Image (cartoon, rainbow, N blue to C red; front, top):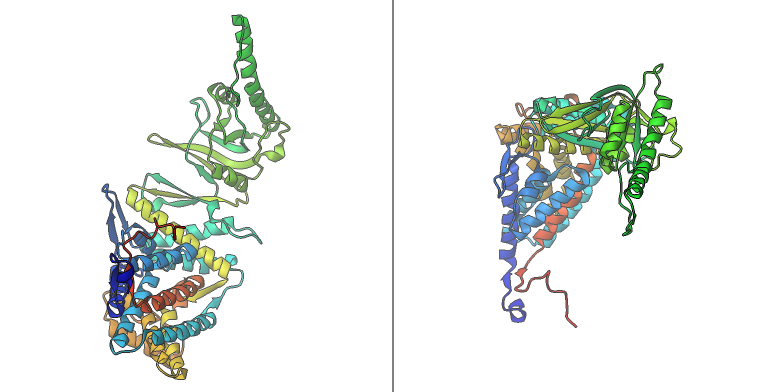
Length: 538
């Protein structure tokens, strides 16, 4: 019928449309499958200009791969939405959708209507979400439970980078989150600066409880290292500026011109002198204090010369986001005027020093009291190692943030999926009619996570999975899978925890998309571009 309206439209009817959607979901699942878990393999992505990225992070893969197929692209977007909201769970979502579609295919081939399967999925989803609420472990005041937070971060990071790197980085991300969290305020992960330096080894990545600025002082005579410093954060122009309106100055002699130049210079010098006066007032020989200026606007060479003469480190054109972080790191407040400067406006740090790497300079502000912002300093010798570490740190920070905000954890190592499968096997007995088959498919699909964990570890999937399932059914205790040997383990004893929010989001996202894809009975590729057509022309 559509071809009557638009002769250029491509139409796929019921069985064909379903086959297209099923194949897309299964194809994407096959690509992502080998990346799941700590034993997952890596993918190498090569860009058009030859740039290389090595990763097994699902969200990076889906973001970088050029997916042409409309259904596969839809699944990828849904998984990316999961990553944006929770920071993890992309690979699990793609695999869960693929497994739901794959198992539904058999029932559909036997003539079961997709609507009945979708009804079963909906019943199973609601029941699984209720079960998740009973299965989670409540954590009171998670910031005090450092060990548990480290376990969560470690579980997340081990799926992205090698365990030898993941374990020390877990402590880094937990300490970073504990530094920036303020009582009674929402957490802002932007207060953790992630800075990379192409230097040393990736294992030298560390947390600086202070701030690292990616530029140095702009005068050769300025000191490279100061201890016991007052820090002035300001947003004041310390350079000669042109007037904002178009103005012309006319003079009849060289003396008048000199006067004009002097008065312009004097305007800037007065500001610098006020800062130097403050420095002389607060830094005396008795207290041994030194002085550092970090300015968001420019400082011209004559002003730098005056400041260098007073043994002051001055940094100009600091980034705006660093100006927000500085008062949180070292105290004091950012000032917009040099009038009425007082010692209360100044922050404090035990050590400020400059480090040069080839042409780049970095300024470290360390030894601060009660910092509420910090810097994760990523070091590495290659670009792809630094990029991999950056992605992992970001996911680790999100994992810890989710735990702090949810005040809950879920035992990992596939424990929730195994427990939910066993629970749904009991629940389906209370479901009448054909939707029961949908519940059964949903329960079996949950096992895709433990199955893949075993497969990626090179173990016998059927034997080990049956053993773990019987352990859960007979003893009714929390049981996960060891990726080392496939034996049943207690995830809590091994310190393997997942985020409650990630599991909840996955259950809210994957089954709904699978239902929609199953209920598609016609795929129409219109001849006209849908975007360029601005609706009906009147």
